[in-house]
Amino acid sequence: MLVVMRAQATPEEVQAVCEYIEVLGFRPHPLPGAQRTAIGITGNQGEVDRGNLEEFPGVVEVIRVTKPYKLASRDVKEEDTVVHFPASGTCPAVSIGGHDLAVVAGPCSIETRDQAFTIAEQVAAAGAQFFRGGAYKPRSSPYAFQGLGLDALKIMSEIREKFGLRIITEAIDNESLELVSDLADVIQIGARNMQNFALLKRAGMQRKPVLLKRGLSATLEELLMSAEYIMSEGNYQVILCERGVRTFADHARNTLDLSIVPAVRRLSHLPILVDPSHGTGRRDSVLPMARAAVAVGADGILVEVHHQPEKALSDGPQSIYPAQFARMMDDLEQIAPIVGRRLPRGIHVASVS
Ligand code: PEP
Ligand code: MN
Image (cartoon, rainbow, N blue to C red; front, side):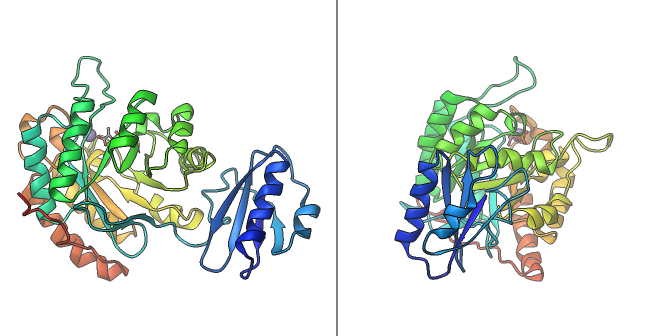
């Protein structure tokens, strides 16, 4: 259910409706918009008695949301969600969603301090706003490199300070979630955990934005339902990420499903990034697919970069060289205005030593 408030409704009127929803034993989700505030109701099994709610001052109407996902739906919030990161420390203000494109770059895994710093310096110099790197790695083999854990999080915190890059890294369980939530700017939930509902709920209780990657064979509805799990706990800062799905194609690791981008736009207000690295698994495909992703309207790109990919402990074959990353940024900068966007660059502090 959705309670639509009048444009002139006062904060007290919104508050009174929220309190009444709580009295009924449900959870209110006030969703401020440019035109008006709407209040989503979750926790109800059947229909909520709309009669009483419609009597509250400031209420225009109470409508039933028929989609299985509510808070993630455009029916509930018309305006695009923009996740803001206000300026802090050496980091300038940046955002994901809205007019400016966001670029997340870095190695698959944090391997050593030197490796991470070398890559961070180069992606910052080329204009990335976010640095990625796995501290906790969900690997197909238990014998493969599992990540440096807390040490990697500490290295990334230093990188944020030195280069003014925001940090995105994956949480794989409750323990890593707490640490990632404390030390990173964005909590990544990986493809393999997209339907780990207990983890999604925990991520929903954090007050950090969550980057939710599409599962290996997940439909769009399943992706949005997973976003709903996070939002239903009160964390509305969800960023979706298309990273390719399993198909019969044998020319690439996965099939990057760019057609999901306009479909997400239609059904949801949440921003969506595209990851052409996991989406193709091939270095030579990353640049063309990144260009295509911006052309179809993605809110940004997540890409794996390594200065010595042949020595990388994970995902070397799909990691691009720093020089290729710089070229990618040049290309995206040119494509962005054609689709009404801008690639902000040069706001980093890469020269700080
Ligand atoms: C990653 O970003 O390195 C990663 C493991 O991604 P995914 O969950 O999409 O496989
Ligand atoms: Mn990877």
